[in-house]
Amino acid sequence: MSYTPPPAGGGYGPPGGFGGPPPGYGGYTPIEHPQGLTILIMGILSLVICGLLGPVAWIMGNTALREIDAQPGRYSNRGQVQAGRICGMITCGLFVFGIIAAFLLIIVAGVSSGGSN
Image (tube, rainbow, N blue to C red):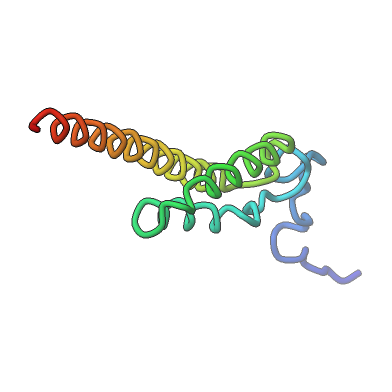
């Protein structure tokens, strides 16, 4: 009889898994929500350039967060979506504050010019 050495690695095959799902709760690897980056960009642009994008980022962020919460572990960019949504909320708040301030300035200007006659 001739001797044949065992294969490299001690003759054992690759380690087996536990049979459970891979990373992510649903048995699949988490992916980024397809609108996550868009919501973040629109939220930032609403603060910097165009305030009209604020409500859009807020509404899209709400929808995306509902989708993310409906499938826990499926999406990996919840923070990105939340950041864009919060930027949109801040922009809406600043917009409302600006409208109220402009309205009050118009009232004050009308009262002060009417009383000086």
